[in-house]
Image (cartoon, rainbow, N blue to C red; front, top):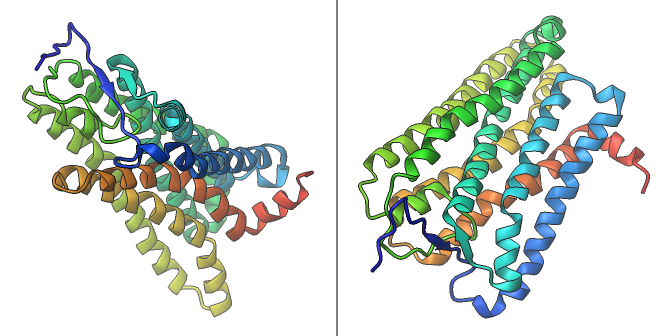
Length: 308
């Protein structure tokens, strides 16, 4: 079997739905619907926040960041996923694979960071309402946005560069219809201990740390809510968090499940990897605009104002 060193870059083969290659054209229909829903829904959220002056507030600025990351995540995978289903375009060069992998993980890490920022926003709004406008100024929100991008880039750059030192001599068939770090790493015949350790460190230092701070934020929020005397006010305060809690759940549950499948599910059927990979990629971008449109009164009102 040929060995591909970094001087001779390999070409990987992406995978659609194993065993159902004959039905890829039909399978592409729900995928197209999901991509259209995700892209149109998040674009609508961005348009509404941009054009509606009453939504020029910290909570909605963070929501616009969330929609931006969801759009980026969809665009990062759109070409390869639909390319496989429509024309069986499975081949992807090593450089293109690394580029796609970088942006997929970048937008994933950014989404985790934005969800943490939104948790902080809810904590300040409920626990320190009188200082809300002072703490979350436009400058501070811009700084948070810059920190979100910088953090993801700094963590991911070494992760991608470390893959370039590897040699590939096993099967070059990936488990997904896009390039995913653990998936690419598993195909190497070099020692991947450093890559594996750095990948684990990256996920712990981003999604792991973020999830802990999100949980801590909600512990403090619950404590603040319970200190409110009026039951009606308590209900009103906590209802502002429902959309965010749901968004956190639909982001972290698929992400954790996919990580477990890659690390501990090597004997799992191929379709399990495919299913979890697609859920991880598409469900959050599809569901987030729906959740915020349904659960957030101000967004719902603004949507109704948009000319059909």
